[in-house]
Length: 398
Image 1 (tube, rainbow, N blue to C red):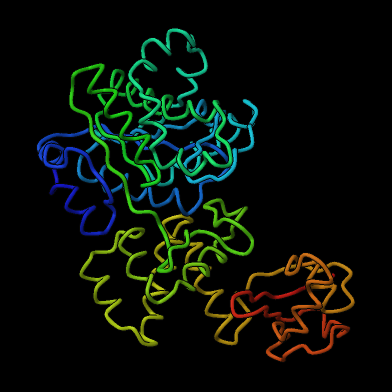
Image 2: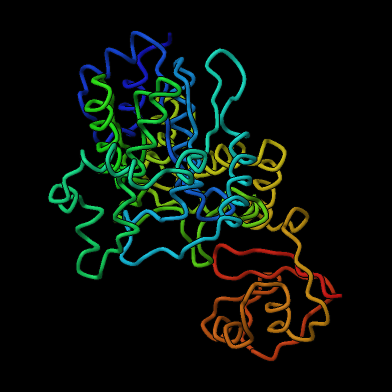
């Protein structure tokens, strides 16, 4: 067994809440513990928020513990009300199954499924979709107080707008997941984001009631910016781990543009760099912090997309800011006669109106020259277009 993983997680800033902390610390230091994190397949790709959970699983596995990745093929058909002000869109079973398959494929890049403490993937649809409702109420529902459930943060914030009975069952289903995993695999610890605290705690309590055995809960701090906003969002939407949704270059640039005050936290939570190296990289709060941002962006892109694509993304970023267009991302603009046409055809702007507004606001340059005329013709069959400080592409007009 390696050094106690709770020390690692605490030093790197993961841990937000635990239950029976002393007992859990001793258990993690004494034996290999089967633990799980659940992922609801509400999209066909993991995103940055998921990546933090996978990083935590990696630390746990490296310390000798056994990860169980639970795919919410069953709970995903209900929808988790945590952190929501409205009801999630109901997904068909076919959509859920498609997303489950995508998750399994992506997770194989981050979690080791071979070796002594190999990770396993399970789908709660295997036991939830065939449950007998009356039996479930008698075995599980009898141990839940509605009064206590209504005090949970995930429900309180929904009561004013309306909470469906469908969603109200989510806590029971997630708690039942933990019980099933305990019975099948000896899983005694559930991990998750702090917005899941009530659900995770419910599962640990259910095991202690039903099995008369210790079970534990641990939540992680949410990945937020210094001003409290969730990280992993851009004007285009979520930052995905699937390169077809967020390209390696876009992924790299997202982290390269991390706010100065968030760099050290992101390095601790999302990279595997030693804390001493992180401290040295982040010791400055002047322009030298830019080097730390480049290291952060490179390390995360390498972790998600591999070394080759990380090297290319870094070269593209350096080309964008260093004057060379050899490594810039290439966008085709078929039949474009004007810069506005090219921006729309290449996907730089959603509409001609948006492209014109960007130009009028001084946010577009061609070959380092500011565009001031919304009717400016394309200068050549190939040119470099800059939108703001973050988008830099080579446009090829066909």
